Figure 1 (cartoon, rainbow, N blue to C red):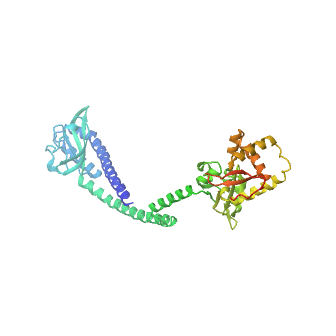
Figure 2 (cartoon, one colour):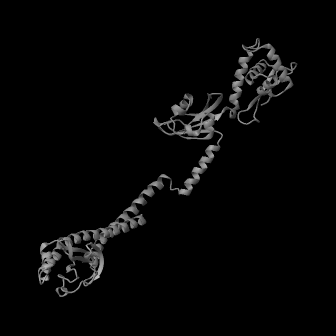
Length: 395
């Protein structure tokens, strides 16, 4: 704040000093051209004593314009007016070549009165230059005026710096309270750790704001929903999540509730989207059913009961010939999966699975989950010895 205020003050001071000079230049140029155009002054150049007419006029104009001097000289540089009458009749102390050439000169020069900011204009008569008119103000007066204004400018700068420092300190304290007084490197470390942790979790995590907009989705949740984190983040839950997940999210489910999403059975837990009747931030956790094998066992048990009722006959869509081929292939390849049996017989994995499930349901084969594979566990089947009957295969 202090550096910015100082820089702004310096720039303002430079511009202000230039504005003062420009204002004086415009005024001096107007005075000089007015004097050079006065018929009385022009006609006096032909008098025997031009200063008798020109000197009073020049002094009146000088005092009225608050200038340091008004000097009128002929083309030879001889003065017809000067604040010090003793200088009249002498040659001007600075070079008059520019105004004598018909041009206007603006600049700082040192003359009999000292260093002055001056304007010189030509005096014309019938289109010819017959002399010069020079007006100016002392540089010391310009500097004094600038310094007087600089006092107020400095005061404004100091005031602005004080207000800025206290204001920025106040804003900083508010921000620091809101970020629990953490330093920037600590915030960066927390964000990095959170991102690393969230995206390496095997559980899916979805965070929803109080207005129902999804603010955070990790990679596991996106995979379980067959989507991407970018597509889900910023979307509304009603548009991005299945209706059953939305219900669990709103109502809350701390113990976990199984939800079927496509081919997956997902167990969802939620903190609930309302607290004391008010909308609040909610989090829903998703876990694939492979991590809850008890749920799989219950599903398998239900399938076994249904299949037991169909033992007396083949279910619709199954043929006895293909069933015998599947049974023979399974006898040759113990602990085979549906894919492996299908490959051996040249049938699809889905068809092979239906026949294997039927064999398991009527007690001719057993099924077991293989957790050694990546992702969801695979189901493997083994034919039972007809003399021993069904056996329980440990899982």
